[in-house]
Amino acid sequence: RMFGPPAPRSPASLVVEATVGSLHAAYARGEVTCVEVVGACLDRVAAFDRQGPALRALITVSPHALGVAAACDAARRAG
Image (cartoon, rainbow, N blue to C red):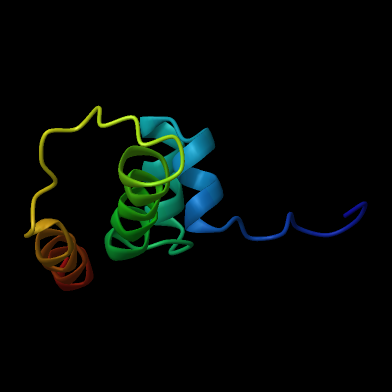
């Protein structure tokens, strides 16, 4: 885009290109939620660690990851 604000970035692109600062800023601006970012991370784990190249670099992924992310989102909304 040549003019106007930049297009919103998807959680998937944030996961690939993210720094701690850029994620914090995206959360603060309301562009992404913790659930979206954790979901994007889990999608990448599935795509690269479990399927595709099947890197098997992770021993386990927490089954509670999305629940914890949802609790973080709720705490952020509550202030």
